[in-house]
Length: 564
Image 1 (tube, helix red, strand yellow):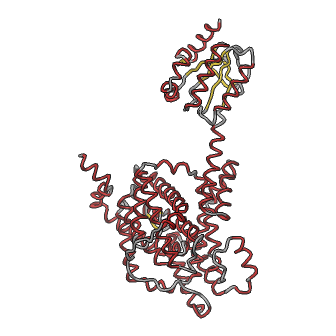
Image 2 (spheres, rainbow, N blue to C red):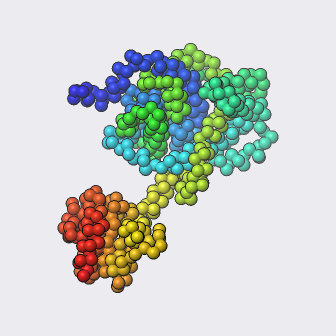
Image 3 (tube, rainbow, N blue to C red):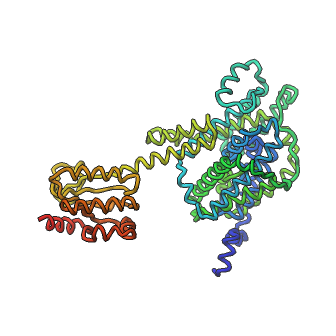
C-alpha cells in the first residue's frame, strides 16, 4: 500500500471496506432490512426514556449509524439511541429543566450536550486514549446498567398506571405516591401496559421465529387493544403525531453557561458511551475475527454524535441488540448500517402517521421490559458468589445510580474499583522459600520438612514494587533486619513485573544498608523490564551489578562464598 493510500484510509477508514461491498452488498441489504424492523420500537422507546419526542429517536437511529459506519472501526457495530445514553441524557438535563414544562429548552440542552459529548469522544480518539476504557471495570458497568434499568422501570410507572405523578419524582417518592393514589389508577391504561409487556415476554420465550420482533409485535397488539378498550375516551393517551420529514438542520445553541452546566454529564455520556460501544464491538469481534482499532472507534463515535447533533439528534452509542441482530443476520460490512438507515428514512416519510396511534401505556410496558433486560442477573449472581470486594463495587454503583446523580454514581463505582485494585497490589505476596528433596525451592507453606538456610533467607516477591506497595516490602525487610541470625536475603525476582522510581530509590538504600552491616541483598531472575528504572535512574550502579544473578544455583553458591 502506498503512503498516499495509507493516509487516505486514516482520514477515510471506509475506503478499507468499501471495495468489499461489490461481493457482500446482498448480505448487507438483508441485514439492513432486518435492522430497520428491529429499531422502530426501540427508537420510540428510547426517545421517551430520554424525555424527547418520539421522532427524535428516529432521527438518531437514521443518521448516527451512517457516520459511525463510515468513520468507525467495527464492521458490525450499529450505533444509535441506547438505553444508557437516553437515561444519562434525561438524568443530566432534568437537573435544570423538565421536558413536561419546557420542552423547547430541554431539547436545546440535549443537542448541546450531545455535541459536547461528541467532541470529548473525538479528542480521546485523536489523542489515542483508547486504553482508558479499561479503567472502567465490568462490575461498574454491570452495576450502572442494572441501576439504570431499575430507574427506567420506576420512571415509567406513571405511564403504566396512568397516574399524574409530580415531575422529577425519585424512586422513594414514586413508591409512596402509588399506594397513596391507588384510587386514581386508570385500569384501562394498566391493562394495556401489562398486556403489551406479557405479549412481548411470551413471544420471546415461546415463539423463537418471532423473538427478534417481539417488541414490535407487542406494540402493535397493545395499540389494537387500546383501541378496543376505548382509546383516548377512556384516558389511554397516545404518543401523538410524529412529523413525517427528515431531520432538519439546526445549530445547537451554545453558551458558556450551558457548557459549564452540562460538562459533568458530557464526560459521563462520553465515557459510558465509549465503554458501551467498544465492549459490544469487542464481543462481536470474538466471533467475526475482526481486528479492531479502538482509537478509530472513538473517533467514529465522536463524529457520530457531533454531526447528527446539527440535525436534531441526541446522544448515541453502540446498540447491543441491533449490533447482535446485524451480525446474526449475515452482515459483512458497515454498509448494512447504511442500508438500515436508508430504509428507516422511508418508514419515517411514509409510515410515520401510523405511530400517532401508539399508546403511551404500551410504550410503558415495553420500557419495563427494556429496564428488566438491563439487569444482568447472571453476572450479578456470579459476583455475589465470587468476590465480596466486587460485590461492594457493584452495590455502590447500583445505589449511587438509584439515589444520586448519575455522574457521581459512575465516579463512585470507578473509585471503589480502583481502591480495591490498589489495595490488592499494595500488598505483594512475599513467600519464604526452602529446598526440597529434588533440590527445588518451594514456598515453606506448601511442603513439610523443607530445608531453610537461616543465614541466607530466600524469598520470592510476587507483584510490582511501586509507591503503593513499597511500605509492605520495606516492613518485611525491616523485620528481617532485626533478626540477627539473618545475614543475607536472596530475592527470587521473576514475579516482580515493575519497579517505579520511588521503589528503586528505596531498594538502592536498603541494599547499601545490608551491604555495609550484613551480608547483603541479592536478586535472582529479575526481568529486564523490572531493571529498566534501576538502570536509567543510575540505581543499578549504586546497587552494584554483582548482586544480580540469572539462576539460583549460581546465586546460592556465590552468596555462600561471600558469607564465608
